[in-house]
Length: 149
Image 1: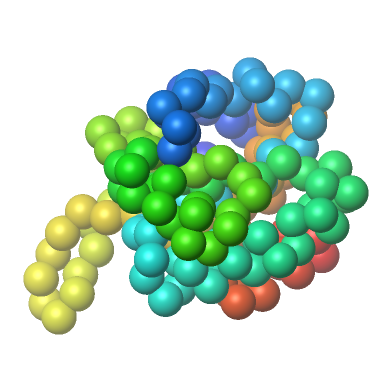
Image 2: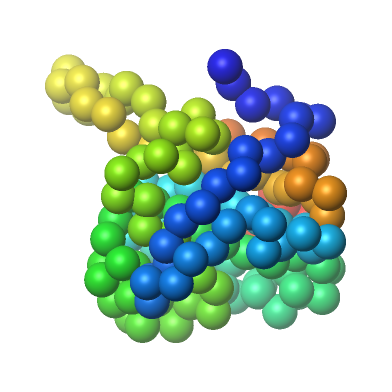
């Protein structure tokens, strides 16, 4: 089952880079940008995260909270945040349960080799927990404009 605009967002629970729990309920009454990305410290993921970082104050002023999710560990997230001075939390979904809830963990192919991985996708969730937008064709270097326009 794929999520679509107008659906209630899955009630996820995860652990951030500091080992602290984060859940959808924490953002009740707020707009949430929940972005799923493949891997810390890779060119596209770094460009996407840094674009959100560079526009973070604008995102907050527009009423959005930002949370990133990948299957990397808490330690990798902590290092990624420190290296690029990211001001928002990253969830370590090492068991890919949140990915599976949102339908972002799928079979991919690279050089003819099939493997399971993250499909880069951003969900914009409104104050009531309803999915308002799903961005699947992410422009990593200009992602904030995709979200706010």
